[in-house]
Image 1 (cartoon, helix red, strand yellow):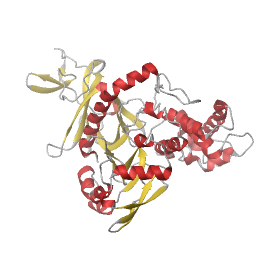
Image 2: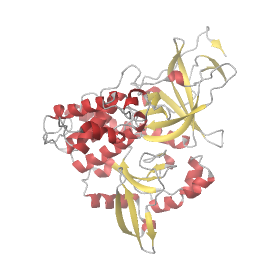
Image 3: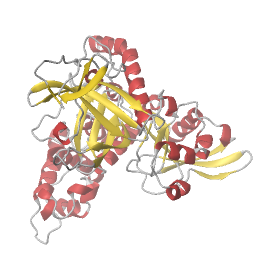
Image 4: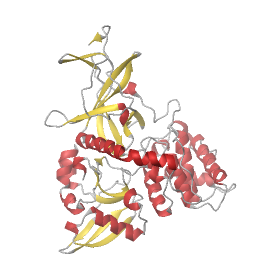
Length: 464
């Protein structure tokens, strides 16, 4: 498990973990039946010997054999222990049974769950995407079974709003789900009725509720399709036009869905639960705290508003330095330091994320940076020579498009965050409006290509 941040992680539960369920149905002296869950909640039953000493690598291999997956699945997927309270990606050497027995201790250490919930919680084994599998490698996969598993997991994250998406992206992704589940769009068929009845199978639930913006008409009595529903129908119609063939394999649509998800900066992240301070509403009234999800991947860190379903802050590793405080020091928290501005003046900002999983997040950031340094030479060579492509495969895009629409849910909303600005003068740290001379933290990505800079103070700064 990722207690040391090397090849594993823990975070908040995902869309498939809606109920308590056990992965070990019986444990005998020598044999046991183990249930491993896939991203779509289907079950792979395994009969294994000596379960208490069995490693995650051995169970991973058993799942691949049952599903008849190719070798790339060894890198693309990992075994996770998950429950409604906590997620943990396992290292190959970990022993899932023993970690399952330690689950209450892990919950007490890394969650704020009440004692009654801790006592009732039980983890399940899940076979899902490996956080450390690079997106560029995903573009080289052509096996339909592997693509389907990746598609199902991404779809679950979109529908659960774990991956916040703009309306037009929800429609485009939902249209691909329509194509997979309903087949090619055919004029004259009652597709609108089908979509209306199963709308939450194609769009995130918060967009399907009555009275929610453009989707208010979806559950109405009128026969005319609502605006959002019509957008989904139009996007569904365009899927056939883009593909151009009724006989297109499902792999084409799985792949198209994943490529669209690659535009989302938090695709493939590990998710953690935390809280941040709200900006003060007045001089005498503090803003309180808001729940956030912290998404960490090989590319950077995103802080997502858990209620509003939009990004509050997105940073590449080159744009930040970080550290964490432990409960022994003070309240457990992850600290992110980054460039910003205050009333037009360049400043350095400090964000405090309250979370009992701060240690895990800090370790994961450090390990992702180490992996990136290791992978840089191979990635550079690949960009020069190009990856080996299978016949008929889609070429990888030269540069992934970033969503830069005005008001996009994936753009940072720093004005909704309460940050700290300070300056270092000699041996003293003074909070000012804004700046400081040096970073509090030595933990940052040191690279000539990095955009993180230290702002020098000026005599005109107003001290607070």
